[in-house]
Image 1 (cartoon, one colour):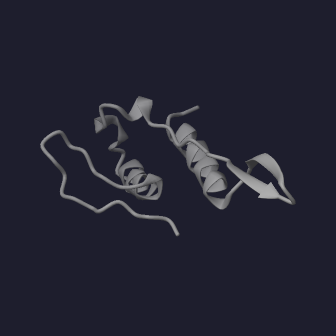
Image 2 (tube, helix red, strand yellow):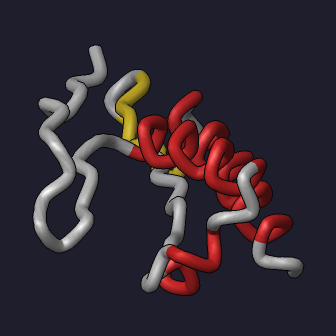
Length: 85
């Protein structure tokens, strides 16, 4: 089960704590409001798909794609679209 970060108020440096899903759902309303330009580090944002290592019949299998990896890939595509790329 995925652990969600404890939500905290926005701190003095404007940081919002959360996981990649929280970030994505914060990004979409900002895009609708045409406010992504106000995010100083927006050009550095990145959703990184992670693969898993599993074992099947004693054999390790690397690079197994998980639901979380597919979701991160889709989020990254949207992020690139919002950046105009």
